[in-house]
Image 1 (cartoon, rainbow, N blue to C red):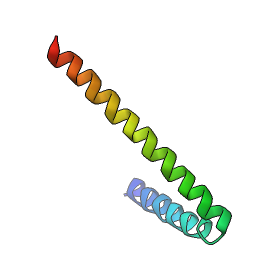
Image 2 (image 1 turned 180 degrees about the vertical axis):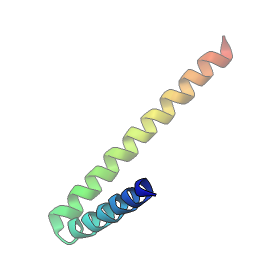
Image 3 (image 1 turned 90 degrees about the horizontal axis):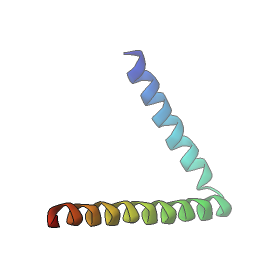
Length: 59
């Protein structure tokens, strides 16, 4: 029960911090940059997974 409470507390703190950061133009810019980098990273992971999957299926 304690772990669930701590998880919920962490999520709430993260949401609150995200909203506070979005209030400033610099914060919005930083969040947009972070989201772009995260999108690039996730696309690279997907590409690597698909490439490796193809290699394993072809062999």
